[in-house]
Length: 393
Image (cartoon, rainbow, N blue to C red; front, side):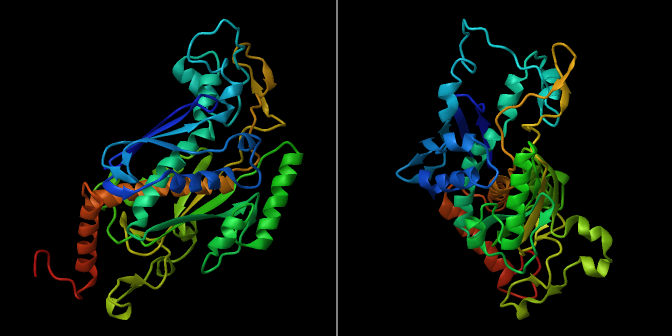
């Protein structure tokens, strides 16, 4: 129902995004998307590239007079650093000899990429596999987020851990503190330790990883399906987040912790709608808002593990692709920690997956049509108890 494509290289002219399947009539402007692009560029531990780029997505099609038209939406994010790479990344042949990059980087796409595409230079792989591409995902996610807001669905993220330091778990997250924190963590004490860990890694020529958490409020019950593996919303969300650079693990709800508890502690007791103003609720949320491959009406809670960045100023030993000799891995300007920024990318991917599921469930070619279908569905599942048989008035 909703899909997006991105194109562009880290040091090319820019990034191109095409979003297809969005309904007509959705209010949308460049500033709404720019907000998340700015959030992605922040966070303690980011590299020098963030001082160069001032990411802004220009809408070049699919929107007229401030509203989507139902046609594909195309966006363009220019790379300011392109001015320094016009020869190296020229589309046309150049007379100048460009030295190939051949010192492989452990933990990157370099070796599998050159083997797959029969290359003798890691530059083409490096350019596209770069996390610079996540700028395009955040731009696409901004459109999905704007759609979800029409249904009062909110997607937020915060940092849970960096460098072995973990935030205390609270009942509610102070989102204002998250957005003002240099590491996007609401726990001030843990945040200071995270900042110190990043600074220590920088001084040692090293990098650190961590965990971010995405929380979705307002999603209705019934998104996704139990009937096929590829329609389960849990799998769709996990795949979307696992596709983010450096993410090596995803859990929903209590996730891996459920392996160490009894069944009576793992599941969420269902309460009758009469106790919750006609709404189906759970006493707890160990399931993270998803049961049987479908949303259950509780908050969706998803966490992702972000490995330490593989590009380090003190590089690991590696192998030269051309000579086969042992060398130090190539160093390309990079970050020390991307966990705070990765959370923003996680929001975008979750928003895109949920917007797709919303359109799958409620359809519509115009926003009012989707809204009508959505409202009727909410009436059907919350206005009467017990539920009638299907088709019964």
